[in-house]
Amino acid sequence: MPERYRRDLLGHGPVPPDPQWPGGARVALSLVVNYEEGAENNVLHGDPASEAFLSEITAAQPWPGRRHWNMESLYEYGARAGFWRLMRTLRGRAVTCYGVAGALMRGPAQVEAMQDAGWEIASHGLAWVEHAQMPPEAERVAIDEALRLHVQATGARPEGWYTGRCSENTVRLVHEACTPLYVSDSYADDVPYRVRIGEGTQLVLPYTLDANDMRFAIPAGHADAASWERYLRDSFDCLHREGGRMMTVGLHCRLAGRPGRVEGLRRFLDHVDAKGGAWIATRADIARHWNAHVPPDGPVAALSDAPVGAGPMAHELDRDAFVARFGGVFEHSPWVAERAWALEMGAGHHCPAGIHAVLRAAFRTAPWDDRLAVLHAHPDLAGKLARARRLTDASTAEQASAGLDALTDAEREGFEQLNAAYIARHGFPFIIAVRDHDKAGILDAMRARVAHDTETEFAEACRQVERIARLRLDAMAW
Image (cartoon, rainbow, N blue to C red; front, side, top):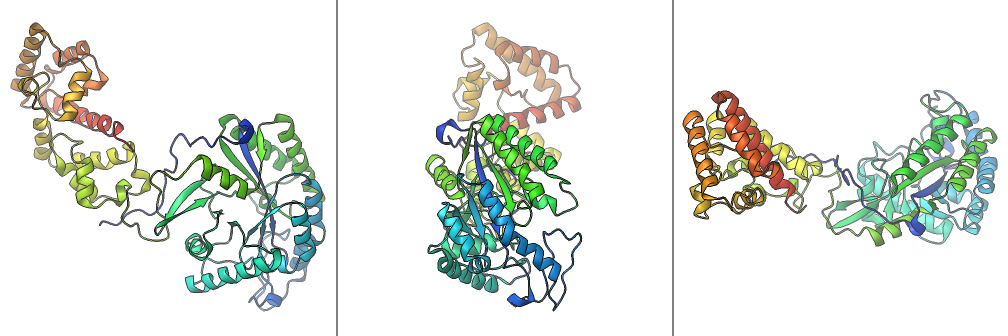
């Protein structure tokens, strides 16, 4: 099996599935409060250095082996003041909390308030630390401990999971540890999607870094609440116009919980209420609705942190299966599919455009004699093979689509004369994607092309072969 590209750059494609949001809503709006305060990097927590991420301190750096008093107090603001301000602002709305286990354990009053308000509390991992360099076994231990503490703090296992500062292994390890209803360590789409992990699948509800108050804490961000509010409104209005999409707003107690920012959030929510058409729901409720209305009945891309294994998608087929499926796309020329199978492919190739691209690449890079053989493999239009019913099923259907199976004697004689003249001049059959033309158009093209020089006509015949291949791929079930 050739090395396969592990990422999925296609997803749902140009038209995402319609999730039929409740009440005819145009947008499913997810409001997420990240509760991290008390679990950030701190030598008091056994970490090697102080926190340096997402705060009011510009270009903060970790202080190895030392407490950073100013950084600590900024995080403390989130727990002491910002959380309660967001709680009041979001009162009566469905909210999901991404709760870091260490923060939940150190914030019992906040957890009680979340549960009294009916918030969903998803897991945000064990500690608000970087996981990128964490060995898989160490991360697995941290996930297990996060689950234990989450149950201890909330009374139940989390339905959702978002580590945030994750590694390439995080989604797989979380799935293996607890198979949550959803994970959100992705920013890859505007709607949920599924990935295959081993023999199972995992629903992914993408999170956001753009409609997120973290933009107040980085250089490429918002200077004030008005800028943030405008961005949130524009995002909501675009998704509302498109319909069937999901929007997430990411909030942090120490950032959006500041008085000069929370008013922008409040005005955005007023805009959502006035416009209508939003289903404001917890992420767990969105996941359950998606599972009910968009069941996983089609091929699902494998997770990208492990080699691509065997499966039903085109890039996962072994050579024999790939050739069996696509070997007839180029007329009587299975070698095109054989050579295409050896090229780089990924989940993004599991579509007509994707397979056409690799087949076309194999055809275009083949020696001239091999391409000429493909031209010779095509039958004459309305010729002897058609009369003898010896065409492939694809060619039979294609010629019938233009009425070439029901010619008068005079029409058939005209085609035969033009075919003979064309072959005599160029040395290969006249080829045209008949599904793009009617009978009269085909005759006009034959009369024009028979006069071309052979080099020009060879190139045109190859283009038509590729067009026929694309039309055959379009007709397949995907």
